[in-house]
Length: 214
Ligand SMILES: Nc1ncnc2c1ncn2CCCCCNC(=O)c1cc(-c2ccc(F)cc2)cc(O)c1O
Ligand SMILES: [Mg+2]
Figure: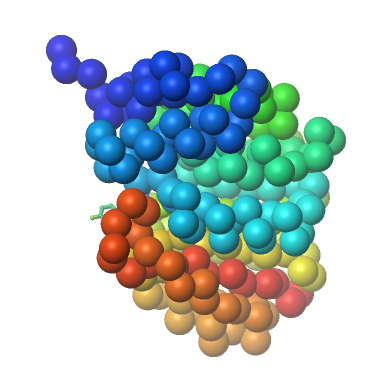
């Protein structure tokens, strides 16, 4: 049977990227998505904004909601100091299997913990299962109708502290209107919009950066 797009993306990484070189993995995926097949990675333009937020924060504990093929996982993990940890949740087992291989090809498996399952099932278990008190950075890139309920769930589970940064992908396309309204109007967040483009296209999209004020 025909291969899947994530399988073809992984082949492109194994063919064109150097083992242990995260930048070559990022470049191989961007090339594949620009010249072969579009895929829903954050991409190089929004990825540069993601990089700047990670570099500014120097986070120890990062949560990513929605791994897909591991492109943003690699972007974030390559910037973390060896002691730091990135936990990434992926609902789809086929995506998770590809992402594990992409993360390993980049040589970043020691900083990344990929967990298969739904965000609403795992967020309440972060403390007892992973020994996490609070996160320094949360990257939201999963089902767009889960951004708001999962943010409220993270608040209720005490996973956010004064200064925790939420960075949300796709706030314009596909769009997350209920989440945007919440973080932009809540007195508990200081929120700002980074205008950009939908990965590998000219359509508008952007990232919303929201700092939890406690
Ligand atoms: N741990 C968990 N819990 C719950 N859901 C979970 C999960 N882990 C995964 N999922 C399920 C996420 C499925 C992928 C989410 N991302 C998207 O749906 C997405 C779509 C587009 C897009 C834009 C324009 C178009 F024309 C078409 C598609 C672009 C993007 O950058 C996107 O991130
Ligand atoms: Mg996205």
